[in-house]
Length: 340
Length: 289
Image 1 (tube, one colour):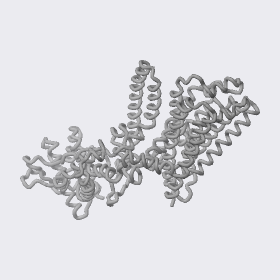
Image 2 (spheres, chains in turn cyan, yellow):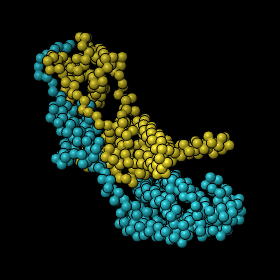
Image 3 (cartoon, chains in turn red, orange):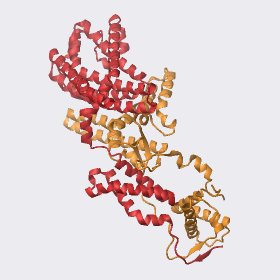
Image 4 (tube, chains in turn green, yellow):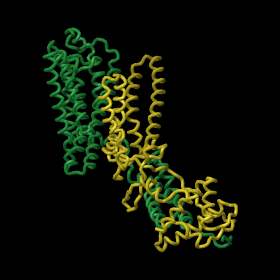
């Protein structure tokens, strides 16, 4: 049946096509690989100008190859190369510095301002939790041990003497306070991220977490107030607490936004609502982590240096006013601009 | 022996199951391939292993230096560094131009926005922050269970099942989206940087075999591309099996050179099917269309 014949070699479309365009594809591949490994700035101006042209050439090669060639290796190669090039041409992230600048100037305050409803709800839940725990612990000190875990109380429980409580507010030794502040930052930031993520479970666990945070606050007040140290405790807490509690409330609000967007998407598609909420809320959440870092510095250094109630309260109040102006003064305009 | 794989079975669970239409602004469908579940698990395991190695090494170095210098600053550095390592590893790598952590890079995966737009910082942070409930929540319930014993076994079991919903989320949807992907509007695609495989060309100094029309009418595109895989794979047993099958079906005598025979047959069949394409006839497989 078979006979060997000497004639013109068969040239497949794929072979001719490879011969004509392979140089372009390889140049694009080299460029894309270089950008992926290093950055867009790693290639020369000539290459940068050639990139979109090479990308479109390769894309049209893909279209032609699909219609005229049966060489699967060629089509697979072109598909992968086009996909990689697409994300370098259309999906390039802006530089880290510009991204960071945009975050502080617009992204962060805008995201927090657009969460104002959720933030208000979370603040009310915190206050409600604090009042409830205060009343409970005042009526029966036994409740204290149900709210605050033993490790966290550190001797600050209803049975502690006034002197012992006063000593926790104005510690003499300052050893390890900075380390403790760094530890607290990591711990609190993880909780902030956690309460954001819990929002995905329709916001209910986030609300419980924030409520519990309020309960702890109220229980601690119920220990200090009857001993006449309520105001001192408030001042001790406020120097970093206004920033810290605000950050926790915002991360809770961010979680609530995701949960409510998934549960009640309104007129938007459920998927689109989740994405819009997720991106805004994530920006607010990462801002909350920054706030917690600030709170850590205030706690580790500020509280060591500043030892009078008045100054502590003043710094705490100034921080709160600063955040409010930053978020709702600067951010509200941004949020309105996004909505319209 | 039958032709290696039946076309129907391959269609059902084949590579097309993970292909997604993605039209570029130029109007070309890129047919993006989603990352397979196994590859994503492997990538994550690789990342976790890398993080742990870095953490252990850094802990040893910093611990040694802290004992030597008694510096509080080093302890703070470790605390902040550990936090950054746990939370920043995925975010910072995925925000880079490659859009992938080292683990994903090794598996040829990358994170992209589902709408094809720029991958924003907010999206990357959202998809990675949700790992808290996907992974660490089940883990913490497990830890609590082992710590408390069996008193709260039912509660822990319930909690584990509840958090398992998030862990196994990618298995419940068509696009293999994690909870984080869903909220961030991203997905993970498989886009490895492969080289262009060499052309299957005839050796120029060798005479080609000639095939009758009947011999070339046996197969379609599907069989041609399977033959291409066999030739590129170059496994002698597969080459021998396929060559024997084609010879038997086409009634061709064995001339002892399986690879040369298959290469020539491939070229002849490919040329014939390609000329069919030019006049709009695409023969999908050996059954016709």
